[in-house]
Length: 421
Image 1 (tube, rainbow, N blue to C red):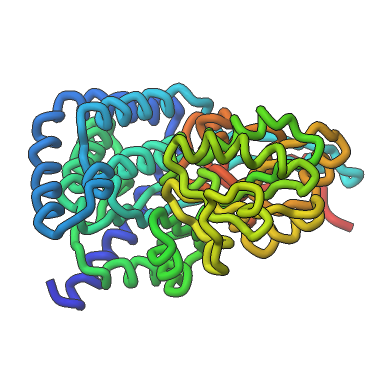
Image 2 (cartoon, one colour):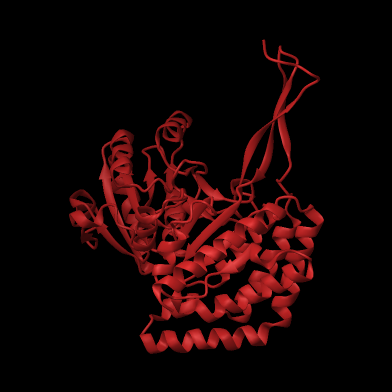
């Protein structure tokens, strides 16, 4: 397909998504839920055909030399399909935010002013590897009344198109325009650039993937982007911390799933407790296979640490590696977080209410945890039911984005003939 064909195809898809979205915003909750549940049933019925299309992607991935980790993300195993089915049913069970009216106030003029929650319109989703994102994103956008234009990674093209066909079949059977959920069918990166120029039709772009993809999207897009570049999350162990609690939180944050964005990448320890805490934590972490890269003071306390280099501070390792630094006080810890953090998740372990509250107020991150693991920064864990991603920008969402974050609020006014004097 040449450049002109790519451009015309993507523009037409975006235009159709805009048309379909106008109708989606008026759908009743019961209709949306019926489509979600029908999609879940179709996924189960089409399991074998999905496996065949996914096998094409896996074979191409092996031929290209994708890593085992990448191939694992790409696979639509029975477990992944069951998880998608469960996710669709969970989204169907969530309260529908669309049409909710709140903050009604009577004004001296006689009018009554409130806010109504409404869909964003059309969401453009750009993502890598995991084809299950196709279902997750489509389900949340549909429930929130948004059209969605999806552009998955080229390595998952057959899987994503097969999933799109299932979604569109469920829409069609429900009497809804299939253009409400579309997957861009070409692998060319040019298609992404064309998509990012369609501000007339697309209201927001949400990228999910590596830092390189997200920076490309942010630098290229004419459309507002909700993003996070990376998850450089820190644990600060205060001088009043319960040391066993600190070890437990460090272990969970680093070891449970080291390759995710809410895993710990750095640990800061108050000098007053470093001599007691670091040997305890290092023993547990190293036994779990974690390589600790420490500052000079850390290495003196635990000689088995690898001396850290300047490039280790602020690095998103996504692996069993952790940077460790001893700090003189909480001010130094917060200064370090300001310099090297990514506004994703920051954790303090402390027995001091005063310092915990100061940490909450002064640390700028989408989630700040007191005596709890960074791994809790997740839509499901926060009670959102599901999430389309985690935003480290502040307009218009900060942190995990669930159904409410896929809507906005407009003002509504009730009057009885009032005019402004």
